Structures are given as C-alpha cells and as structure tokens.
Length: 452
Image 1 (cartoon, rainbow, N blue to C red):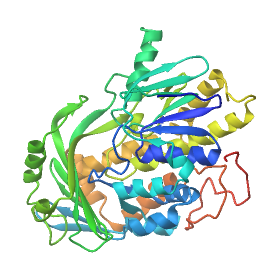
Image 2: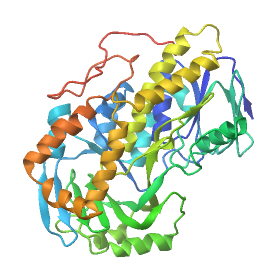
Image 3: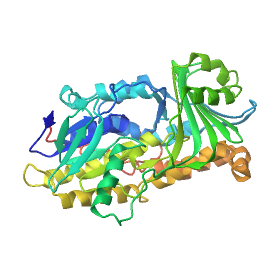
Image 4: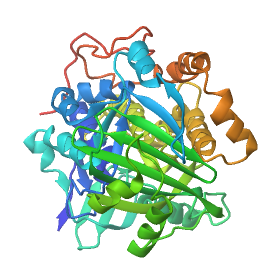
C-alpha cells in the first residue's frame, strides 16, 4: 500500500499519548496527517498511570475532551511521606497548593483510559488516520518530502515526520543514521542518548484505599510512589542500579517478580503493603528509568517530540505534560508557516528547518520549564531513594517543614507551571483559574481554521 498526497501532510510516528496529542493539534490546525502506531491496539493496557497537571488540562480542554476525561481520573488531594518501616514523617499540601494557584489539582489517569478518551474525542475523519500495526522500518527524505516504510510493506508519503515514538525511538535512530550518512564526521547524539541510574517497576491493581492519595515511601536505594484512583491504584517502585547505564535492558517476568519480592514489606499506605496488592495485579512492567535531553531534535524534515528527545524520571509526573508542550509549541509555528506558504506543498525545506530549530530553542529556553523539570524530577527521585547523605538530609528533614513546602510550590513550581503554552489558534473559555495568572492565556476571540 502506498499513500501519496499533493498537499502538505504530517506523518506522526507513534500512537501513544503524545502521538494522539499531535493528531488533535494537527486536526484543529487544518493540517492533514496520518499516525502510524506499531502496536495492534491504541489502548493497550500497560498497567501504568499518567499524572496530568493543570497547564495540560487547559490544552485538553482546547481539544474539547476535558469534560469527558475528568470523570475518568481522580484529582490528587492527600500527600504523605513514609519510611520503609511505615513511619509517617511528613504530611504535605502540595496538591492543594497547585489547585489554589492554578485552578485544579493534578489528576491521575489510567494510561489506557486516557488514550481511549483522547482517541474517542477525535472526529471520525481524524480517527481514520490513526493506523495500527504500522511498525516503522525506514525513512527517506528528499528536498520536497518524506517517505515512511513499515514492516508490513506499506509506504506513506508526506511533508514532515514527527517522531512521537518514545524513549527507544526508531525515528530518532533513523534520523541519526541519515545525518551521519550525509556527514560521517559531524557530532551527533549516541545511539543510546539517555542514562539510567534507577530501575522502575510499575503496575496497577484494584484500589485498596480511598481515591486521591499520592504517597511516597522512602529508603536507602529504594523508593515508591503510590497513587489511588476510584477503582485502581498504581505504584512505581524505584531501585537504584549497581551502576548507571545507557544500554537498553529487556526484563523477564522472573525479573519482575524478583523486584516485587524485594519491596514486599514496603508500605503503600498506613494499612496496605506491596505484598497485599501483588497477588491482584492488573498489569505490571519493569524498565530502566532513563534520564536526559538529546542534543539534536531534528534533521531535515524529521523532528522529535516527547520522550524521543527528552526523558525525565517519573517522580513529579511531568513527562507526559512536557510532551504536550512540545506539540503545542511545534504546531503553533507549523500552522503559521503552512498558512503563509504559497502552493499546496506547504513550507519549503529551509523554512521547516528554521521552524524545527526554533522549536527546540524555545523548549530549551527559560520561556519553558523543560531543563529545570528534568533536573527537579531527578532530584526528587534521588531524595526519596536517599542517594547520598545530602539527599537524605534534604528529604527527611530540610524539605519537611510546611513553610518550606509552601515556598517551594509558590516560588519554584508555580512559576514553571504558569509558563504552560496553549494552542494559539484555538479559542474558548479559560477553565483553569487560580490565584496565579497564566503567561499564555487562552484566546477568547473567534478564529476560523482551514480544516474541513
């Protein structure tokens, strides 16, 4: 099968949360697209949760799916910190402060349910462009277009490739090969650009506690994050690796069970331990917890978003939110360029290069919070796992007083959240209203798109 178009078209590689975000943003921008997902199903249940912060809820509202989505998640409202022996040493108000400052607290969603809502929120014409069982094997680029080839022999022609295919991105790998083929002496990111210091076992299970809990459990070399929903609970079990590694590791069920056994006596709540929920797991997975930011986000007509170009630990729940911001910044610029271009082929290659380079520059600048959030996420993980005596003192004592938490949330986290950008071509009501204003408000005026 070959799909060729004479108008500007985006090929999105990856049908996960960020790929579906691209589908919504491109649809609203009036830009033709196709999404290629390698799995057989869009809503594959991997046992994981996603934390959605208020600046991302604004974008989901622009997609027109917020009212359908919110009942499927749970707003976090209670935070406790434990030691591994069950001692509660801190009860914080971080979630309440986020609600106070930004109009809503963070919401925990089951990943598969979030994907389902995002997919179902697309119009039928856009859904038809989400294709499964399309495993990318090759990309070719020319001065006027790109071609994506899949394992089943299907070929797709377009104007731009957006690689939203995760931490082990095939798009990033092929992009690297193309760049070095053009110039073998140029400096480029390594094949494995991220480094993992921790191992992560994640999973879901029937919720054993009231909804809205977001707890952390700390010890030397091991830590847990626990979230409770209405029907499900989720845990993230962190274990320090013997040494940092950049190599990809595929774990077996035996490895999963071994790590779970190490955490069996750790508490999740004041009455529930890991061993209490393990026999009733609904899904689980084990992976290395990669961290880092790649240096090259684009080459020619290929550009990366989400975990394909930056990866942070899961402790602050910011990864998905930053992938959303990538799409927003990229599509705001891309739409302007497409509308300004003469002819059906869209912007020329030179213009696209400038757009992609500016997109990376913006996301890496102080206008956005990416670099700082990668650092803060890693800091939180190391604090909870008592990575060294300094992290231990910071986590157990120095950051515990209520005044310190308020100052941190107000003067460190809130200024970063308020930088969240929105689609500048979608208008409507500002749903997230708190004490702190947004740097980029939702436009209340009417703007027509070209999509039909």
